[in-house]
Image 1: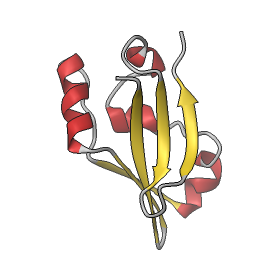
Image 2: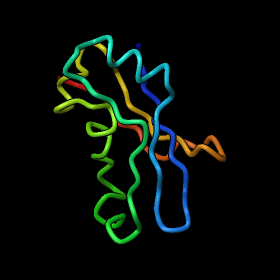
Image 3: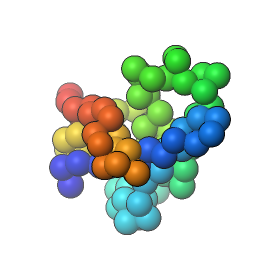
Amino acid sequence: MEVIEIRVSKQMDGYTFWILPSVRKLIKSWSPNFRPANTIFVSYDIKSDFEFNYGIYPALLGIDNQSDLIGRVNEVKFVNTKTGELLHSQKITA
């Protein structure tokens, strides 16, 4: 797999991040230690710290850090669920 797509939905009081069930299943198949979440919600009160970081994906994917994806994924993309707009892209490098 070259790209993992994380869907981003704007809510009244923050953002919800989620991955497709097929992505969760794939991640679980890589290691029994990987425990991807269904969704993660980030409220606006902490959004300012998060907005340019996009460090939420290790928690959402159930991994310890980016290095767990090396050799499996080349890129993680954050996509607006409603518009399909690419919000952010993170290359996975050693």
